[in-house]
Image (cartoon, rainbow, N blue to C red; front, side, top):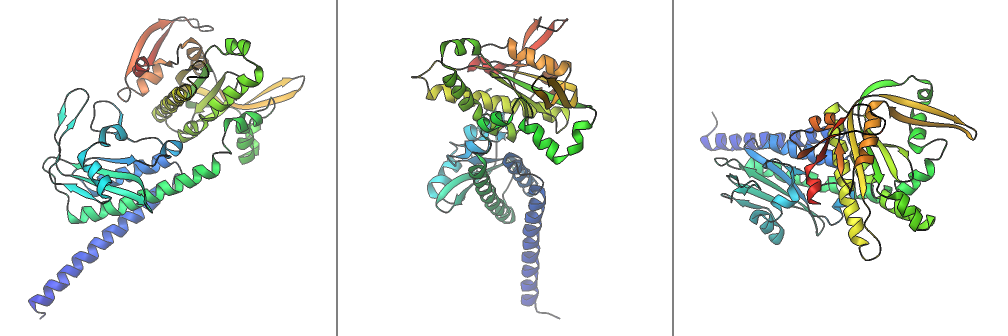
Length: 409
């Protein structure tokens, strides 16, 4: 019979072995999930979801990206503790636990932390809070912040599992930064515009290279969301400025849009001097609509930043947008003319037509939504109904919606 001392030692080793096994299994599970995508925001959301699984008592987990270059390769995550989408950057950055972790450059745990106060005035009580700084060398890249339920407790095992997850965040950010640095020049809109010639757009070339038979396939009906961008007063701009200056302005501004469009799984299929047509078709109807709205909001933010930089040199530029969702015919379209045959991979039908008309109807940088898109994103962003309007080429009056936040910008 083993002694009680030997039995106790054996028990501790067994618990330790089980703990390491759980850490290993958590890392293996994370690796499998992250291997399915290269999109950094999806990976960060996966990490956050895994943290909620590892710590069942967690109310929310935020990954605050503090790398100054983060806006170039990702967007802030959104906090679930509020009545409307708010990015973690604005709601958690100034919390005492986060600030203390940044100042001390080490993990901080508050057994009792101050409650969350939402913009609507509601107070959300919380329990313990942990903030784990994420470093790459001496550079602070992010902070992983977790708040527990009021009666919760962060165990030692959960602490180490969260530390492992924070290490994964560092690797994800490093990979995203390197990917952005390697590809940023390749994905500039000027390149896309140069390849989107009157004959074969770049998006079509990529599709045909992957599947040469697609050019001969029939169009198929698919759930899509279509986003149109329209540069306001492009005609006036062209009439008052040299062509080279206008082209440079459009290319420089639109070049900044490519990253958020691609991050949101959009496919740029058409360019027309003063605008772009983007299709979101790779997911279910709701996800397509959400991705289109995310891209539109990123584009709006980039346009405002562009105007702020050139405030003392040029008049502000307004990019109007129209988004509509539904079933469309998707596939190759051929246009024959005297100069040859032009092919494009696009969506056609009433869904696309309404999105284009909404962009033309928008004013002052508005983001207008069709009724179906407004339904699909209900509860995620504040939407304002603007009544009905008669739009060119559409017989019946159309109900129009806009993102209510447009009024504030």
